[in-house]
Length: 344
Image: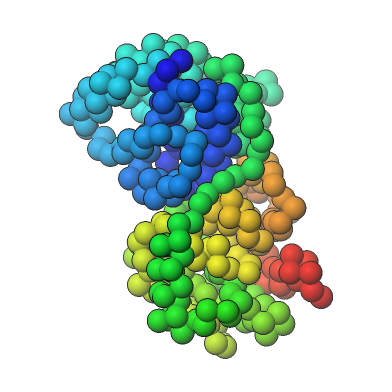
């Protein structure tokens, strides 16, 4: 194979969890040109990686957009495509571009029609079995005869981004040597993943007072996540910094994550960015099944309440009280922080 296309999953965390599959392709096909197709912000997320040669932006859902992308893909003369997401739409570009070999999960008849190499999803009877997303993506690259190259997540921070992040934090009142607790209280997935803002505030106050880490709130640059961060900021009783006009660059955000002594996060993209950059992270897990992300746990503490209705996987709590996260006490996050920091 001389040219391979990889269609990335859309969610930020899933794109990070695809990096072991990209690394496997690079090592297994060292002479091939590997192109990655993803949302525009994925380019900044993955910049610095040597696992691919070319980034192709994906945008637009109309038939005209599909036709334009297919024409552009045909010009690259790809030999194979690895479609990491499950949806039929994600396989349409490779199908329309007539890429000869198209690998992906054949979860339904439409997907199987669009793929030449449909891989059966992990099932028990007719039910999907939750497995680590790292393993899930590696099963697709193995289909091309490529051996694994480890499970470590990998992201990179450029010196320019690190300098920009340091300058941004200094302007916000964070000294260059001050240890930081990075708090990311949002979740693009939906309200069901949100630990209550009051819980974030209590845990942040306690971690600052007990372990000497300055709480730093950095929401995604969206009105919804900025509003959540403001609620947390309003509830914190002591010193903290809230970047309520965040830099939209993922490269600067990566540099801020790399600067943190500890990350406190919902089960969302920043969690996986932190793991990839070697930062300890406390994750508040709500309606999602932890088996999807049960990997690289030595520097993580994944906390959840053992309630009968979880994991439901819903974007909004179907019973309305969000007991899986409301019942998750801030004291548990503080204790987990102490374990990761090596302090009592």
